[in-house]
Length: 298
Image (cartoon, rainbow, N blue to C red):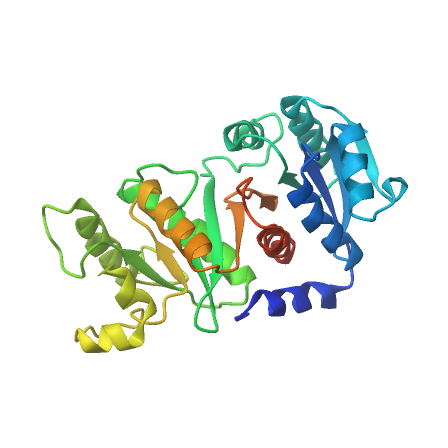
């Protein structure tokens, strides 16, 4: 498995082909910074749909020649993402990327059945990848599924396992995160965690190893797990952190990213196409990493 985003970048570059990426609502200096870097590095062929005048101004400020880019003028973000989705559906682009627009508007377009991005009976989820202790860890779901029930958690795991395999992990270890590492009937997430662990051992959740309940420290720190006497194939070396709900997931990831300056990426998964989705406040580096993890999946 790739241990850093640098290794992911090297793997993408080794493929030797560019992926067509279409940026919706392109008048966004941070998103443009990431897109320019990816194009310069030979990773993508960029298409930009948004306010053309503002996009060109930003490109010039960044030392770029706007004539080197495919720019379509559509100042309305809702119309811009529709144009992008139509291009992906029609094979004129390979993946969409969110620019300066609301996440809800972006996701509604991705989910529109007329584009066919979501498989029948599929479920759209989000995956955030971050570097920690010389490895990549995927946390989910931090942006889409608000309060997943047991069955939805299985689907989130299945999406994440397919995604992490694209990052080179053949048998992902899934830690079901809860506040404590014992089952407490007053904490519903611990009950789900125990059920998921049993389902994993029985082969009802495939292509991964699932364990829980595990508190966050036990999931990522072997020293913490050892100190607490936790014996598990997953404790201390989790590849995937299944978080209890969107509240805890969003808070944890923003704390990790903004308070600890951790590099990360964010993608929508469960779709038939790679989808780049980042926060509008994400750094250019994290947006670039999001392009990398989408392209490696492609």
